[in-house]
Length: 404
Length: 154
Image 1 (cartoon, rainbow over the protein chains, first blue to last red):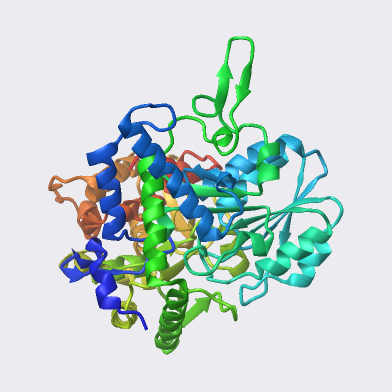
Image 2 (image 1 turned 180 degrees about the horizontal axis):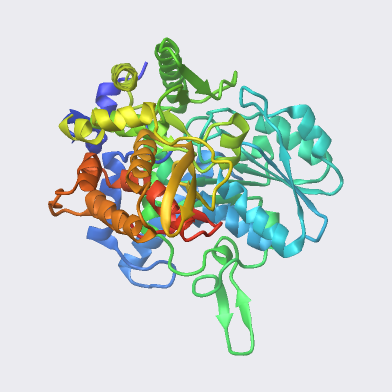
């Protein structure tokens, strides 16, 4: 088992108080706290070798270029991509999906079909809707059952020769459902459809191996995996990324420019216009190293233990109903109380120092599916403790007492 | 916890549990629907306006305790008032939930609003408290549009 107390010392923010109470941070699906090594790596970059990458011949530029490109290799190894140029740095998963919708979208025609699921984050719904308006593509949605699991038979029925892309979340940010992405990808391949995996909630909670999975694209955000905001990743198979037109144009993504003609740079630079988020990439690489130093197997085991503990504690609370009870589930617990609105729960818990998320979690279609306006969501990380989950439980009891 | 007690005073908890003038109105002259996309709160406001006076006012929908109590208390304050007076009350309410300054709570109406002073300490909740009021104003202007608080200045 992990030494959580030692791990917590690596995260300076976890030591603070909120409203005079020790912080209980259970909003990790929204964003995670940052370990000291990440903060220091970024600080060191700005103090010691801040400079622009790729063009400079001076020492600092070489140092920053090395750090930035090494970060790309760290990400490549982390998800076991074949080549480092298959890793494109973006602002986050949202931008990664938008990049694909814009570039891949140019190839699509009216009547082409894209399949998503009912549990997608808005970021994996809206870009495709925009494409529907622009191009007349058809958006199809895999339904889910009452436990919040994809209905695989229905997915198979949606697939056809018209399917050009299947874009699916690996782990639902609202329900915690872990989707069978390998089976989903394999099935899509039978129809020669491209596959895109939104790994925002999973890349730090599971072993992801893009070559083994065989997905065409995979996206995630840095800030959800203990790295800073403003950095994210688009993984794409080299041959596919090569075939994409540029997303944005400008510096770094060109080979030569004249007023008559511009030739574009090779991958990955072709898809990274402008000076990128250098310190963010350095922070992301450091976060990945931190995760690996703890060990993914250990993280998965401990978070499962936390999830079981949370479900056990909360299921004893009368009038509490879980939203999302999939068999295969990550450490995310969404719930509603019969008589108390999630917003009131959120404010109450905050006064006890407990940070959870209340609302629709950017998954409004999912809220409609379960017939609720919003839920309260506690999402756990390896730095959380069972003591913290007891504080959560006790705080919920207090809310119920106040409103009864 | 004092701030919390201030936010969730007994009056608010009571109006949340037993909202006044709650439910649909079959025949109304004015109507508007309000929506707070942040928390999913939905509220419908129905009014009967005769000769510029709000003869009846009801609300329906779902929301948190703050938004429900605010809507409930609003109906009790606005019924019987002229449209101009209702707008004046809205301005006062707005000051109560947002102003840092001590508002002179010297009228009966302002006294009833005073329970919402605690909302000031919770900036994220100001929109909950004001949704019903925004929607009521929209209804009195007889627009059928949906009011979205996220786009409104507090």
